[in-house]
Amino acid sequence: MYYSHTVGQALGFLLGLTDEDAAGRIRDRIGLPAPEPESPEVTRRRLHRVWSWPRVPASLTLWILEEDDPKLNAVVWRYLGLDAGLRRALARGIPFGPGRTEPVPVDPRLPGEEPEIPESYVRHGLVGALREAGSMAAGRAAASMVLTPADWRTVTDADAGTPLPGYARWALSVRPDCPPALRSQFGSHPKFAHRVREAGVLSGPAEYATDHGPAVRVLEVLAMGRLMFPARIGEAEEALRPLVRDHLGGNEEAWAVLAQIVGTFHGTAPELVVTAGAIV
Image 1 (spheres, rainbow, N blue to C red):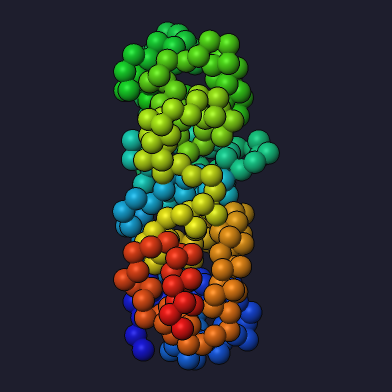
Image 2 (image 1 turned 135 degrees about the vertical axis):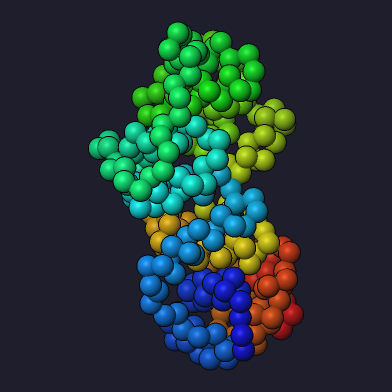
C-alpha cells in the first residue's frame, strides 16, 4: 500500500511508541515499509518541510533553538520572519539551552545581519525603551533587545516595580522565549491570553501533541523531533504513549483503521487514536 510522506511519518511516529516486535508486525499488516537511512539532502528537505504546514507554533522554534546547534539555527533563521529578537540572538550566538552560558558558534551560512539597534534603546536603555513604547512597532523594537537570562530578569524586576506599558508587555509575551513566570506576571486577561495563543506560544511539546491538529500534521512535526528538538521530544512521546497503549496496543486491525483515516482526520492525535480503537 502506498502512503504519502506525511502519513508515513505520522504512522511511524506512533509506531515508535509501541514495542519493537509489535511495531514490526503492524508494519507488515498495514504495508508500511521500515524506515531507511536518509541522505543529508533528504534530511534538509524534511527540516524545511516542517515550516510548510500552516500555523506551526512559535514555540517549536524555541525548542529547536534550545539545542544550540549551529546547523539547526541556520535552518530556523529562514523562518523567523519579523522576530527581530530571535534573529538578533542568533546573530550574536546567544545560547538558549537551560543553564548554558558559552556563546553558540554562528553558522557561516547564516544569511543576513543583526537587525538594526532601535534608537529608543540607544537613548533610554533597555527598560527605558520598553517604558517609552507607545505603539506595537515600538514595543516590538524595544523587546528585540531582551536577549539573555539577565535581560529577562531585569525586565521582570522592572515590571514588578512599576508595570510596563501594554504594548511592551504584548511584544514580550508573544516571544516564545519569554519566561513563563514573567508572562504570568503580566496578567491573565482574556484578550492577553488570546494574543499569546494566537502567537503559538505553548507550555511544551506535550501540549502540542495533545491539543493541536490536524493530527497528521502534528505527528509529522513530532516525527522530526529526534532531529530538531531531541531534548524535549520525550515530553510529547510520554503524553501520547499511554493512549497508544490503551486504545491501539498490538491490535493490528485498530492500526489498519488508523492508517486508513489518519490522512483526512481533522481532530487531535489523541482523538485520532481513540477513534481508531473505538471503530474496531
